[in-house]
Length: 318
Image (cartoon, rainbow, N blue to C red; front, side, top):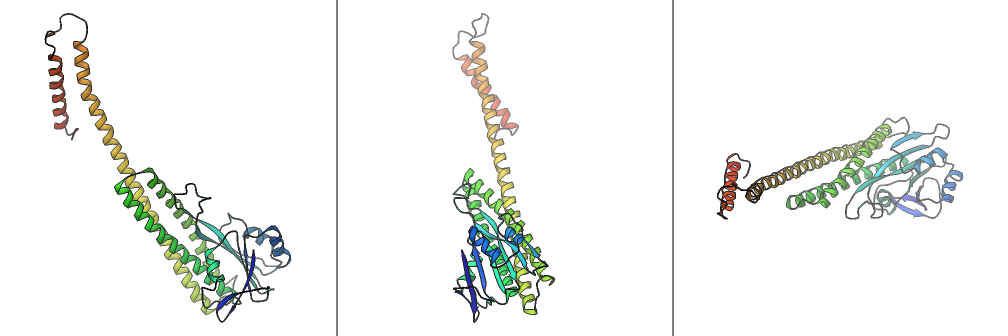
């Protein structure tokens, strides 16, 4: 789907046809729409191929022949139930969002393979002070929104970690541990994507590929601050989650050791009556006090009591 937008008095509104200074948004394009990008907008084929690669990493690239600039960053999103391994486990992932500068046509193009919350905010006019003809500033505003989106997702992950930890303290179940695993994978994705986002923003700040004005540099500083804050929060959340996982893993191992020790002690104590009754149950002559049927019972009880006292005195049995 292709949509056209243009700003007026700092507000973005949708227009019917493409015109200079507008913003072209391409979402889940069909084969014919991809051909339109190559033929009508004359976008470099390598840029189109990279923009629609779901595994493409964050970077910025310049085509020296046409002057076109490609910027790709990863945006966070919540996995759909159809994509998730388990519908009960909330897991986050990232997908690429591409920006293309077309200096000759004076267009700013965004391309995405799936619905993007960042693009939707600008397309619906919820963000003020936006001018589509100021393309570098528009890009930085979107990058700032992407970084803020990471912070929102990380706060949600932190709340879920606290909830899962609270549930684990009450009852240690496999489902809660699998949910923690899903969050751990999400944090790994976020950490990798944030590093790429910071590297891309830093390259933009060099001013070698995109021209930056003083206002743009102030906005770029805000973007870098948000990215570093998100990176730090992601690192802290990862460390907390790893600490919780290690702690409960130790608790599980300790509980298992206690259970195995208890079962071993019970087995040893119960072996005493078995030995006694097996000895007096043999069909041989010469066994002492064979005429007293209660003797094996008393002997077994005495030996079991001695074994229990010995184990308690050695702090083996508590």
